[in-house]
Image (tube, rainbow, N blue to C red; front, side, top):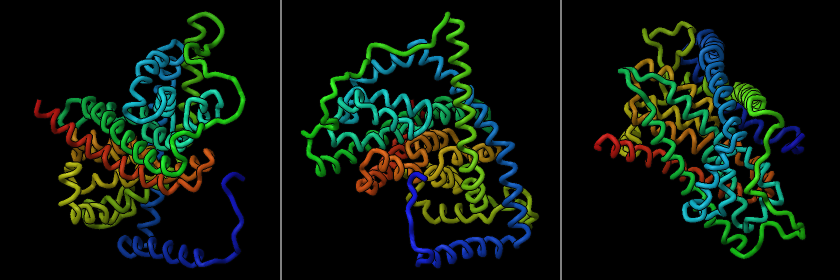
Length: 386
């Protein structure tokens, strides 16, 4: 199996794991009661599957279909041409990397790896620029789905979250640029600036003025593109199920409290730990991100491991009136920029054959994701003043 290795049957990590595992669930059961904890665990996972996962999957299918339609009829090619001149001054990467932005925006972080493995794509890069593709792709991963999801939410007091989501997109772009620039600072020290990413003799050149389309009439091509994109959306919807059900369930149990003060084992009950921590850190979090409640901190924390799980936390908050437009802008920026990078960066850097730079990539993206949220907050404040 990929990314697997052999270890001794027993080691210190076994003891550490047992202590952490039973300590964590022992703490939960002590607060909620063992039976209530188990019931809430299962009921919350089931409720998330029905209320959130299938909703995200539906959005993924529609977004995937529209995205593939844009690819088929050249809209993405036009956007790519418009973005390419911006890549060098903003990100310090060649114009060809704009394709990576669009690819990951329409799908997920690892989509950029197929490009990085293409010789005709790699020839546009210096070696020091190649590892930064991990940071670039992650900064825009699941972007279309996240933005579509945010726009589909209805504010508690009416109106629309469209402006907030678009501001979040801008914040994510800023955070991604910062992440890539910091990563390039490290890679320049490692490789210098002159070594080519591809040093072979292959003469192939990346074709940037042509695109691949389906055979047949425009109507047939449109139908094929819609069905193919929708099928990819279904697969993405299935892929996020483990993250949403596992991570989101645990985070919600650490975030929510029981309304009546008595645990019943119902879905969405919890111990309120993360809001309590958020209140203690409010003197830092409030000025930087402008979160309206302590519960909001759960979203970016979850986005560290899974963006799909993170956005799954938001609808109940919106229904309860706990989030504002500013919160949605920050959520969008941080969910996009983080995109579950803690669960993908190790594998992505390994595939790119730069595993020793994984720590620097994660550090760069941690800073970039925080800057994404901070940028979205202050841009939203400026927007409300205009």
